Length: 141
Image 1 (cartoon, rainbow, N blue to C red):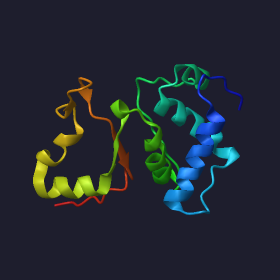
Image 2 (image 1 turned 120 degrees about the horizontal axis):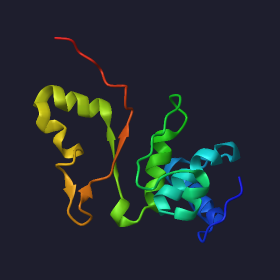
Image 3 (image 1 turned 90 degrees about the vertical axis):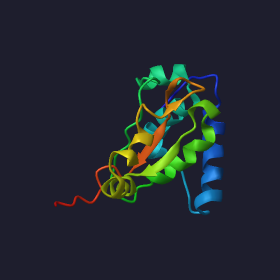
Image 4 (image 1 turned 135 degrees about the vertical axis):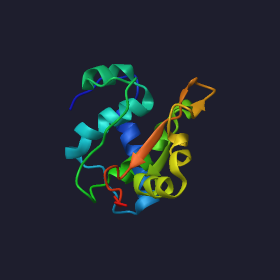
């Protein structure tokens, strides 16, 4: 994958790998075959319009990252936080935990993840990363 940008993506990827090894262990590696998934996410995090255009992603939309269990999606999203500008920083939330909170507390448990939770500095909803979406335990009453 050849990209052109004013950002030094080789350095960004080197930094991500180093941070990943510090956070997750020396075994952590960014694999070449994963770059077609990683590069657009990096472009989104850096708000890099040039690479976003090359990757055909819209920086005004969110990211949907799906894949088999155990492939490093959660680690990747935690790791990417080191690239975000403070205005685009986000938290990673567990959907099964949100579902349990909803079961106990009702609608008030999900309000923090809606447009009612505005980031006043940006006048938009806070950015959230929902982990394990679709893994919630469904209880029938």
